Image (cartoon, rainbow, N blue to C red; front, side, top):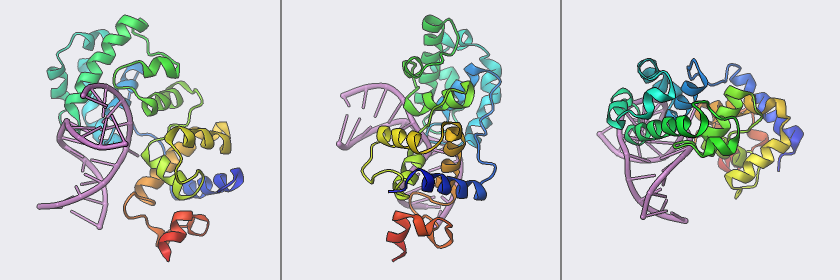
Length: 213
DNA sequence: AACTCGGGGCA
DNA sequence: TGCCCAGAGTT
């Protein structure tokens, strides 16, 4: 198992390959950022940024979408995946913001989680990216990378992985590390065909050693 | 715990 | 062209 020092070394190496690893979601307000993160589930920031300009122009505040027909909202986002469900989430989420939070995006994990379409990962991303609240968002990339590098046990749950990462990585590096692992998972250590042959972390990687044989 | 939504990304 | 996926909700 990688200790804290080795884990930070690995993250540092990821940073060398992806020095500009960060979110590219575009939003001009907390509300719009929340919607963008909800939309980003199971797709790319790029795909989301393609539909949000018109969507945000049409629905500026929660009240503007709270009583909208999900079918109308769906028209704005139908070029991204899972669009029918997401349209429903956005409308319901906006309605809940108006009714339960005075149209202000809440800043606690529990309150965010209570919103439609907002799960553990989305709540963590909003807290970390938008509100500067320390959180380590564990998505499938982060989870997979953590397991492959043996930062966490092979059978660790998402919740356990989050806890271990928070203990092994300094709090001020949580957001940065999240981004690096996302990029690492997308361009270097992909789910199906990781590039072990050219990987600078091969020597300390549990999964890499297994695969290279 | 398994299933569903779905266009995008990549082989 | 085919296959899986930068999740969350439902059953």
